[in-house]
Image (cartoon, rainbow, N blue to C red):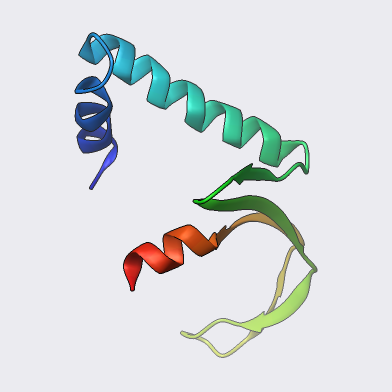
Length: 89
């Protein structure tokens, strides 16, 4: 399922596809804004989105074998909730 398919599923519940698009975009923007502010987003029964800091480290260029520096960065992480895990099994 891609974003367009998700919008179509939400459109079945709300009045129009335009409203569904706005709702999906709003949810994605809200999650992104929270992660930018180092906040976690917990959707009970679904899971938790959180921002994880990764320290700077050394790596290797696979083509040349030379050592390179990989900068520190924040990356998103999703931890599925129990209800989601149970629904899959």
